[in-house]
Image 1 (cartoon, rainbow, N blue to C red):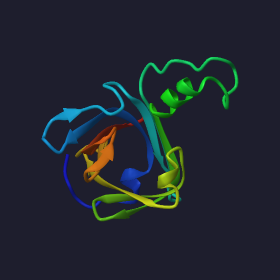
Image 2: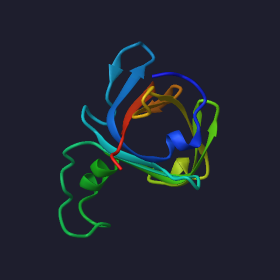
Image 3: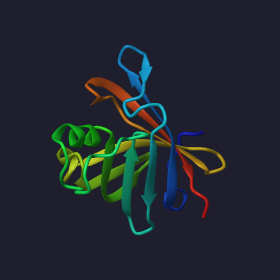
Image 4: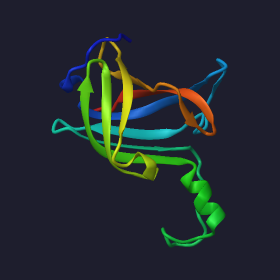
Length: 150
């Protein structure tokens, strides 16, 4: 992996989440979305992006109503899923996600900066953040993505 300016063709495509680690301020590491989250991020050539990430093994919500069910089950489901979409642009070795809609409404209308590192073969992408509060603790997030087969 190397830190350099990215080009649009290198980023465009579908990426599957391989790992998500949190590095806390005290130097310890953890997993705010569990040890085996699943996810996908898509960058299109026209500047659209979408990401969805889920904890593995999420239990179902009682009933067949996607807007119903017991509040405690719905709250647990909300806490184990992250999704947003919008547009993106490159800023040197960073990718800026300009968020249009988000499951976490506080991000809608704002931007999310991700420091990007691409493997020499272009098959692995690491996106990391500056420290943010996630899961109640300040930590830098490191997400490793593998390019999906075309």
